[in-house]
Amino acid sequence: MIAKRIVIGLCLVWCALGSVGAAAVQTVTVGSKNFGESYLLAEIAAQVLEAQGFRVNRKLGLGGTLICYEALKNAEIDLYPEYTGTLSQAVLNLPGNPDRTQINQVLADQGLELLAEYGFNNTYAIVVRDEQAQQLGLRRIGDLHQQNLTAAFSHEFLQREDGWPGLAQRYNLQQPTKGIEHGLAYQAIADGAIDVTDAYSTDGELQRYQLRILQDDLGYFPEYRAATLVQTSASPQLRQALAGLHNMLDESQVQALNAKVALQGQSFQQVAADFIRANASRLGLSEQDTAKIETLSGQSPWVGQLWGHFMRHLQLTGSALFAAIAIGLGISLLVYRRQRLAEIVVYLCGLMQTIPSLALLALMIPLFGIGFLPAIIALFLYSLLPIVRNAITALANTDPTLVRVSAALGLSGWEQLRYLRLPLATPAIFAGIRTAAVISIGTATLAAFIGAGGLGEPIVVGLSLNDTNMILRGAIPAAVLAIVVELVFAALERRVSPPR
Image (cartoon, rainbow, N blue to C red; front, side, top):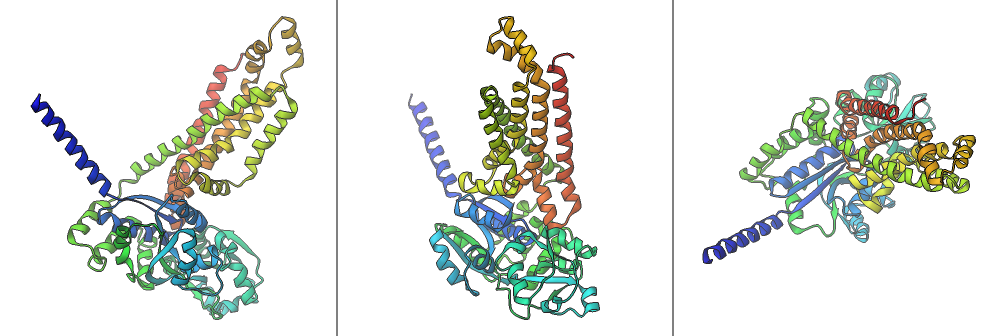
């Protein structure tokens, strides 16, 4: 008995010590925007934290500034790399060119804080092909004034307060413009499809495509000093761990790091790991700390990563589709006999389809955060319309003659539904489910923009790097999945439909 008590006591002590040790490991969620430098800076911060004993979850490639900002405000992520000019102009709408101290005074009201700057200024820039600049004598942004050039800018730049609207007014530029994904703009300008686009002054692609930055002679763009944006409640340990990043990088260093990804095809993880090892002492890391990133920087084979993305995509679409089938068919069975109510239900489901996919995902963040849950809810809402519309239409428009005959035979309303309406409506119902499945699979690729993963993740990264192979790694499996699901539901439809 005494021995048993001793064993139990030792087990309790061991569990207690284990729980204390687990509690001592702080988990941090690191986010980033969906362009190359943001991935790289976030990966550097993540590996610096991991080297110092933090457990890091990565939510990289979140779509746009406001999605990252809202995710941080809602504590869905703990930090992400941001720029002073972006905060002051695109988020906080502050006049002039405020510094970090002034920005933090405003951020404090929202529970956020910008930590010490990394040391470089990644300003917006307007670029043209170097060859074309020489031919037309383009040196300054003002030289574009009377040039008949095709201009295309990133979607965010076209809308930002510090973007195209203000720039066009300052320089009296009246060229028609169109939107383009930032990563694809470089290939487009290199191919001659466009002549002018926006860029970041530290992008590695500037060297790759031989682009010239036009001088901002009127000083329109503010400074974009990079730093880590955190919540004001961030722990002292987290702040201390990131303190070594202060003044660690200048413009030429960042452009060189970006070029390793854009030109040499290295991964963000490997470039970040090499940088940390080379600057370990300045980052306050010991040899023991840097030894940890030897394993952290190793990438698993892309086939294994793709399988994980594929399974995540199945989880997203399968969960949303099954929920839409269950709820959509349930609603349809309740309202198909009441024409006015049925029209209202179909109309409301149709309203969901009018909201752009990425906008709906972004609207989910304040309510449900980022990740799996908001993606499921958005996909569920998009899947409802084809299921509900087809089911209600088919059930309500059963041949009246057959309905009267069944009533004359003494069939109750439930029996008519079971033996007449549902069998005849089965092909239309399955057609709606097939449509919903294809819509869900395609839309789910956008879920990567809110950190939900899936096959959209390699597409998002590929877009940021202008890497066609990586884009296809996500696009082709998604297309194959849609075709397979279509064929499976078609086979099920033939199996359960009544003989003709």
